[in-house]
Image (tube, rainbow, N blue to C red; front, side, top):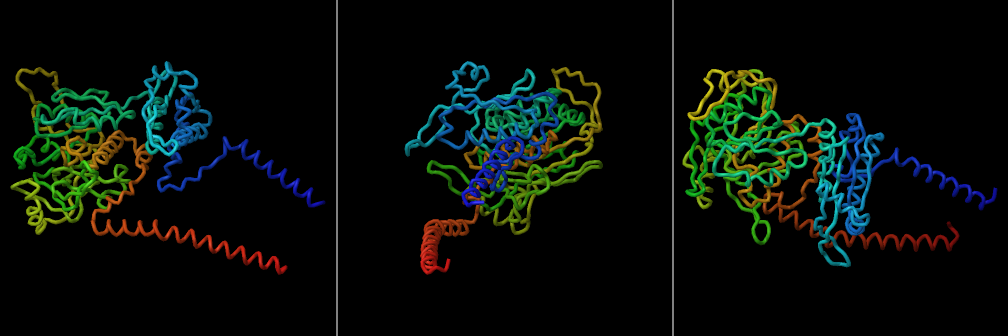
Length: 526
């Protein structure tokens, strides 16, 4: 056989292999994902989603054709949607539509999908263009719409939770009950937006029975709640309701910059009955808090704002398994004293450099450092900031009469005295999740709260997806100024000197290697 014939046969076999791979790539494929959390590969939860889908789910991706040539995000979204379709064994179909090119504006408007300004780089200049990047998910005659996707990190969580809710025909609802009069629902708009589209949010009035459609109840604040207000919350828990309580043991008055103990406060007494003691103290720590100013981000030390870090959280609870940090404002320490049939854990704690202020709560920034130095002499340790408890809880009103309020007629004649198995979360900070202070960690606080909502609603597997969001590599995560400066210096040297020298060294090595081979070839050695 001639050498020419061998080359033809080998080329033909290679072509056949390529064609075979191409024909089977729709069924058998793999993705090389080198990101730490496998951000561009869907999890087993999403891959096995087809097992819970009786009828076909249709996904329509509305995207502007122009943006696909200017930014990687649209293709990343399409790749992920294709993975859903490929792993679904025909239960999920994908259609890509171009609203502008195909003149589908009326169709997108009916779905509340509109073009949004998106930053791109074109011809060396940054500018914003109006583009579509929305997804509509249809199951039978029901729809869920993600109007605009601006990041890939949370897309799998939104898709899987949306498909699951559609198929189950069950809408998850978070009820928000404000237990304080100094804040309004508007202070929690960032939290409400983060819940969408996986949770619907409804405001719950104090003193009224908790609606049956509420999947999870958030009680934010405790200063203005009395026993009349608490009875429907207690009975909601007795029926198996799941609740997050964000409470305080010390009421902080920002006008006078002082704090007052909340002695014999009804909600705190009720939580103690459930097994979580909120102490009338304030935790202090000496780590700097990231705060935004007009020029960017600055670091300030204010011990009453306590920074929680990954080293002091539960690694086994799904809420904090991928903890990204949080800031607690004037937080009260928590302690577990669990009744029978109840289990619990402190899943977020302050650092071991923390202390507690037990009285004379002077919160002025220019005086708090003195209080911290005095307090840490006899109370320096780690303190609980977030507790989770689950089990069968005793009613706070088991040995009390059903409370009444003059002028209001309620039809409660009976009460449950022992709950069915359920879950509770207690946060020792009544301000968490409220947009009160311009700190960089508001987003992290809200992520923590939404993780709690998923855990309370028993969707632990969705937390596995949600917690894969990209971890920040910001140098400001290194709290020590000297260590942060050293890290920045090392990175600067590596980028400015080591990498260029490495490239030059490789080039020189290849040059002399080629010269050596050329010399050996000329001498007939090769």
